[in-house]
Amino acid sequence: MTPPAAAPEGTDGGQPDDASPGAAGEAHLAAEAGYLPPTVSQETSLGRRVFAYGRGATLVDVDGREYVDLVAGTMTQSLGHSHPEVVRAVTAQAARLVNVHDNPTPARLAAARALARMLPEHLGALGFLTTGAEAVEAALRAAHAAAAPGRTRIAALRRGFHGKTRGARAPVQWDVGTEPPAPALLGYPAYCYRCPFDASYPSCDLLCARLTVRQAVARPDVAALLAEPVQGAAGVIVPPPGYWEVVGRACAEHGVLLIADEVLTGGGRTGRFLAAEHYGLSPDLVTLAKGVGSGHPVAVLAGRHRVLDERTWRAAGGLGSTYGGHAVGLAAAASTLTVLRRDDLLTRVTELGAVLAAALGELADHPAVGEVRGLGLLWGVELVADRATRAPDPAAADRVYRRALDLGVRVMPGGQTLRLAPPFVIEPDELTDAIRRLGRAIDDVHQGRA
Image (tube, rainbow, N blue to C red; front, side):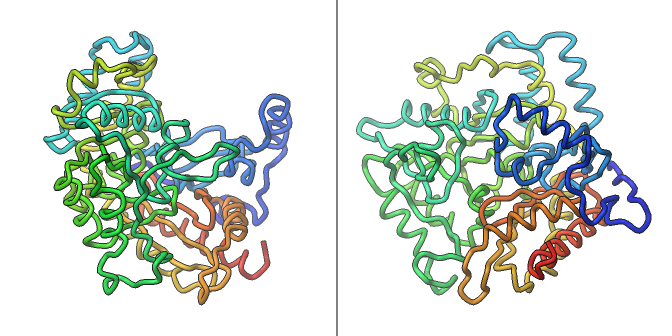
């Protein structure tokens, strides 16, 4: 594995206590301001860091400051930054062939074979695209094409996130800008910490699952249920045992296609190649993206042959995409998946997940922490203003995110929850030290020192 960069003696990972952007970073940001809006995303507007390069689990900014990257780029660099085998594969492919639309290429066949070795056997039909949102929209088109007459509606779960395109956002009501949400049939995720029914597991008898079935699945007009097995953008919502057993069984019984959105979780992030495997689910369609291309733009729609058949391929829009057959991205995917399988990284994710769970467990009793939850190498730390009332504290989360950067640790902000998804190649001691520094950031903010 790639060793962590050495930290200068007497410092926290090579960072001074106040590591706001240095001179080079400030100059870069000032130059960009003439071309780009200053708040492209919450992360960039809060962090104001300009990253120059990365190796393994380490990022380095233009001022030479180092950061342990606990979110693997955008939860994409599962093998770490600039994995040498992926770099060689991409470089070699770029010298041969880049893109010829969706035509067959050796790179596409190699990616398909590598993917088939990791996926459940029933997901044998594949389509390659470029982004998670694009794969989700293709899944929705496929579901409508395969649906029986009269089944015209898509069901989803509250708090779900499926991409930033208009079509991918439509199934779930998120307050985004000035766009009105599209009407949808919405079920309830198993967000036990903030149960909308003020119930407790297991005495709740999985009311959220049973209402999801009644209100969103058991209807004659529903074509498919689109859902993340583990909700990521919502704050890493990990369902308890039984939830998906109830909902998944109902989909099969009522003839509703199950679309597992594994754009974030797919590729081994949770310790299984698909998070659905933890729950015994056999989805009809699966979307993947972040975990399969080491940061290169490649996404996948996988499904049963009876769903992804000629109706899907030839339907208007189908699975065609200008860059869907991008040979460089497919080379990155083939290399990433080969390393993942060869090096048994799913076992490593499980082992590192136990290390991460233990380290985060040390933070669980902090007065500013409401709940710590996760699976494998995907975790969330939810911050609250008051543990008794569970009042969310997104402002504190923003400050902790900035303070953690000052201490040389990069996490991902999102409302009141800080999300963590480190590379699979991070070393255990590097991981525990980074969580220690994150704990210091939480305490500094809580004590008013940051």
